[in-house]
Length: 265
Ligand code: ADP
Image 1 (cartoon, rainbow, N blue to C red):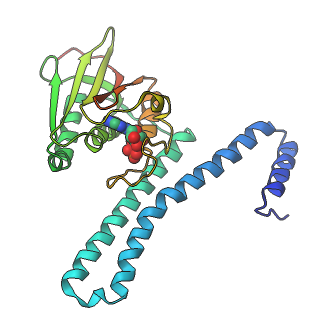
Image 2 (cartoon, helix red, strand yellow):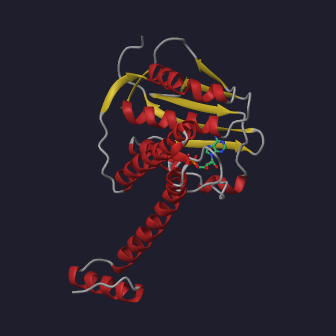
Image 3 (tube, rainbow, N blue to C red):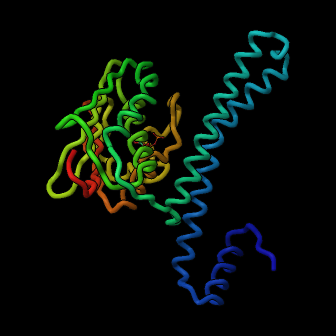
């Protein structure tokens, strides 16, 4: 049985498949649309860094390889491009797992303050490059134990702080806070005084590949998956994520977590 790539034929094949398997045709069509859309976005995201890397390699092959200094510089740049590709592929891998619901949460009690401090240490250099000050505000100094998947929450915190730096202004600030909410919840806020987001974009921010700046020409462009990953992780925990933002003023992303059932330290 041949399936050509012609869409008409493919649709007929899907319909037949649906009839044979007695599955809802609409679901399949939606899935097919989703798959096409996803693949289109993926190839688009990979194209820019791939062409960049190829550019450096071609220049090297064209003779630059004979100049010792240029050679090193171009190889380093090509390597940067490859690092970016790896980063995108890792995000793609994660979002795929999250979207098919193949996510296994490893819940444990841990100190969210310590996790945030760890992320600060990792991102310190990145912030310094834009002279952005990272500050941490916790109500009662010390530890705040939550019950969640430590590694995944670390990813959430990382993605939000990375964004606050990426879309923050030079000499700006990013403030992270952990506050007690009513009952057994805490709320973590990541606030910046950066470029902010216009109202009309806010409802779509958490969609995969959605970007306010469509050109993608931003030098530090990520994968466009950061916030989609954040949303999936928080929702898998049955928690909530919020965003408040004003264009040219700044943004605040916040999410809730369950407190660990243990005596307060
Ligand atoms: P990206 O890889 O483009 O950063 P994300 O999913 O992390 O992808 O974010 C989606 C879009 O939301 C970004 O392209 C940016 O336009 C906007 N955005 C996210 N965080 C912030 C922020 N702190 N300030 C301003 N804009 C932001």
